Length: 356
Image (tube, rainbow, N blue to C red; front, top):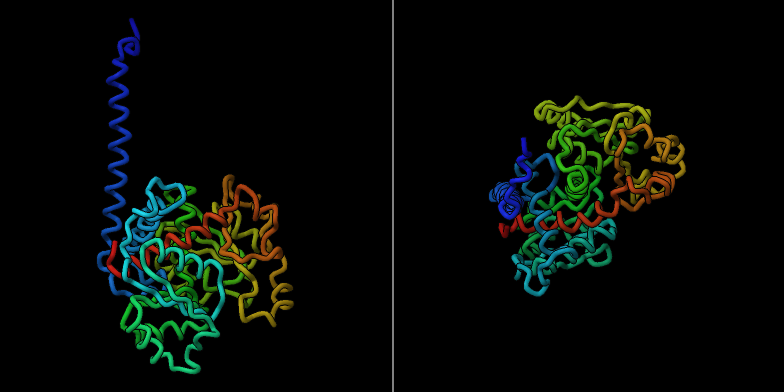
């Protein structure tokens, strides 16, 4: 019996394959557009933490971020001078109590790419709640700008801004939450793995603001969460309770807590750490480094993770937190993760202004 392959209509097969690719691409575009449409109710909202987002809104922000990278990224075929400028005529004031390379550059560059303007106000330009009350600052900036982005020490300052501002506020970091970082992290993981549902995320280090939003976001996307922190450096109890609830709702394992780094990393697909000494904690450096002994992410620790596991760090990093061997390895996603800070803040600003 002759093989049917002999009688295959090659031109027809190629046409069918081309249509399959074309239709698949069209389906992916339609699916992305549908998820982004879930952000229609996000206009005018403040962006304070990941737990305020519905699962659909989180999906929409991630997909809008990817759309912006495809449109404005260095690999895009779109000519920058003719790329869409949906935020033309819009502006964002950026209030920085704490300095940051990535937050400032990503916001200023991203706003420019979208056609808007970003204004940086550092500690020497404005002192929130010192020379002028938080209430007055919020009311004045709301008259000048379309958005207010703030990177502060105390989470209470963010809440005070949202109470009085008449335009959307973005939490670019507080001592309790860092939602923009989580969007960038989750985007990096989806870029690498595709669907992250069922993957296991291990946190090793301080139970801080970065962890708080990441474990919430991970649970929302169906990831299992395992956390190792030294005694006295546990995650906020309220945020942990919220994450446990989300884990149950999204069908993931109960959040695993330990004080042993290798226990958390064992069987994980993602290993994450952050600085042990945040800005404002410099006086505690020696104490913290001593108490975090055994928490460095190195090759030995990464071997406890699943084959193909990856590493994340929000930067800036210090050698006591992660070895060069891991940080600059193929397992490390830290630089794509850092780039994603721009695409994700662009998505948040556009969604808040209803310019999707």
